[in-house]
Amino acid sequence: MKLTKVSKRNLITYGIVIAFYIIIQILNLTGNLSSHMEGLLVPMTYYSIVAVALNLTVGILGELSLGHAGFMCIGAFSASLFSVATKETMNGGLRFFLALVIGTVMAAIFGFLIGIPVLRLKGDYLAIVTLAFGEIIKNILAAVYLGYDEAGLHISFKSFVLQGEGKMLINGAMGIQGTPSDSSFTIAIVILLISLFIVQNLVNSRDGRAIMSIRDNRIASESVGINVVKYKMLAFVISAAIAGTAGVLFSHNTSTLTATSTYFGYNVSIMILVYVVLGGIGNIRGSVIAASILYILPEMLRGLSNYRMLIYSIVLIVIMLINWAPKAIEVREKYVTLLKRRFAK
Amino acid sequence: MTLLDVKNLSISFGGLRAVDDFNISIEEGQLYGLIGPNGAGKTTAFNLLTGVYKPNEGIIKLGDKDITGLSTIEINKAGIARTFQNIRLFKDLSVIDNVKVGLHNQFSYSTLSSVLHLPSYHKVEKEMDEKAMELLKVFGLEEHRDYLASNLPYGQQRKLEIARALATNPKLLLLDEPAAGMNPNETGELMETIQFVREHFGMTILLIEHDMKLVAGICEELTVLNFGRVLTQGPTKEVLSNPEVIKAYIGDE
Image (cartoon, rainbow over all chains, first blue to last red; front, side, top):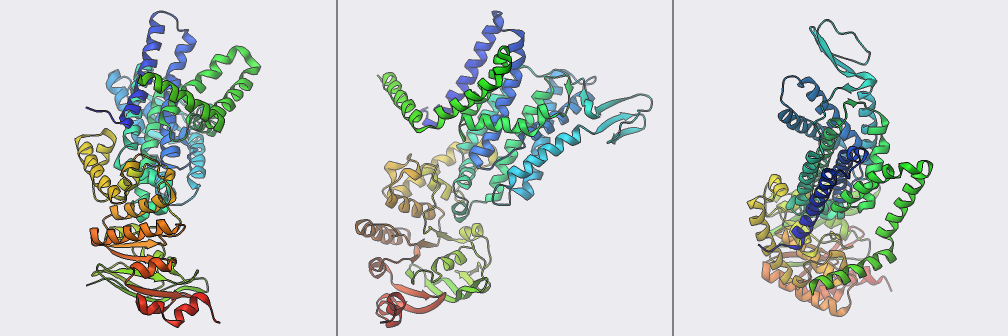
C-alpha cells in the first residue's frame, strides 16, 4: 500500500513516541535511570496527553480553553473514587481499565455540559467559562466530604463522623487517600499512542475537516451546510475526555489525591497551554515534544536552585523564537530541504 | 418552471430599511443579475436569501419549498449555495480539502469511522477525492490540489470558492461580485467559467456584479436595486438602456 504524505507524518509521530519508550526501557534495564527521573516519566506522559487534548481544542477547533486542568481533576477524582471503593473486591487490571473508562466518560460529560451553552456563542467565552469551571471544580472537590457507613452514603461540606463500619472516600481538603498505584510508564505510553491515534485520525477525516473549517471561517462553514455547534461540541468533548484520561493516570500515580492549585489550578491549565503554543498551535507532534521537554527541564535544573526558573523562562523565549521568528524559519527550512535532498539521493 | 420566487422581502436595521419590498422571480436555468449602486442592499438581499439575516416581512420560495426564516445550514441543504464578496475560503486547509468540506453533506460515514479509519472511511474518502478532483478540473485547479487555499493567486481563490459552493450540489448558485478585483483578462476568463458552469451543471445562477461588461455579456435578466428598493426589472438590454438606471448609477446631470 502506498503511504500518503499525511499517514507518513502520523507514523513518524508514533515512531518518535515508541523510540523514546524503548530508549527509556534500555536506560532503565542497564541501570542508567535515576529513581528521581523514573518518577518523572508518568507525569511527563500524562502532561503530553493533556497537551494533545488541548491542541485539539486550541489548534484544530480554534477555541481557547483555560480549564483543561479541571477536566483532569474530574477524571482523577471520579476514577479514584471508583478504585478506592472497589480496591478490595476487584482485580487490578480490570479495575484500572474501568477506572480509565469512568474518568474519561465523566470528563466527557462535563465537557458536554459546559459546551451546551458556551459553544453556541461566538467569541472568547469558552476561555472565560472553562477558567471558572476549573477553579470551581477544584474548590468544590477540596471542600467536600464523602463517606459511607451502615446508615448509607453521606455527602457534606462539613466533616462528619461515620457510624460503625464505614469508610471516608473524599476527606475534604485531605482528598482521596489510598488510590492504588495502577499507573505505569508503559500504560501511560499506550494511552498517549491511543490519544495521538484518535486525534490525528480525526483531523484527517470528514468530521475533522468540518471542525477545521469552523476554525478558518465560521460563516463560510455554515454556508456550505456544516452544523457548526455539533462539530464544535464533538471536538471539545473528545478533548475533555482525553484530558480526563490523563487525570486518571495522574490519580493512580499518587496515593494521596488532593484538589490543590499545584495540581489542578488555572496555572496548570496555562502551563499546558504553554506546551501547546510552544509546540506549535495545531501541531500535534509538537505538543508531545514540547510537553515532554518543558516538563522535564525544570526538574533537571533543580541543582541550580534559584536560577532554575530564570533559565526555564529563557528556554521558553528561545523556543518561541526558533519556532516563530521569520529568520529562524528560513534557516530551518533551508536545512530541512538540504537534508531531504541528501536522503533522496 | 420558477426556481426562486421572492415576494415582498423586507428587513430593517434600526430605522434603515436596507431591503424594502424586494420581489424577484428566477426561472430554472436562468442567469440572472442583481445590480445597483454601492449600498443599494444587494449583499443584504443575498444574506436574506441564505438565512444570514431573517426577513421582517416577505416569503422566499425555492421550487415548491418555503425557505423563509430557515437557518443558513438548512437553506444550503435545501439547495442554495453562495460565494462571498470578500473571499471566505478555509485558508489553512488545502485546495482539495476546501472542496471536500463542500461535499460534507453529500457523503457520510460515522464519527467512529472518522476516529478509527474503518474500511468505510477509506471507501468514502476515495469517492470524495474523485468527486472533488472532478470539480477542481472544471476550474483548472487540479494541479494545485495540495496547496494551502491562502497560497492561491486571487483569481484562483475566486474559482475555488465557486467550486466549493458547487460541491454542496445546489439548485441555485449565488455569486457575490465574482469579478471584484480582477483584471480584464481574468474577468473574461471568469465569464467563460460561469457560462461553462451553467451549461455543464445546468445551474441556475444569480449574481451581483458591478462590472457592466460582464453583466451585459452573460446575464439574461436584471434586477436593479437602489436604496433598498427595486428600481426596475427585465431583460438585460432594456434595463441597461433605461434612463432611470443610468441616473441611479451616474447621477443627475
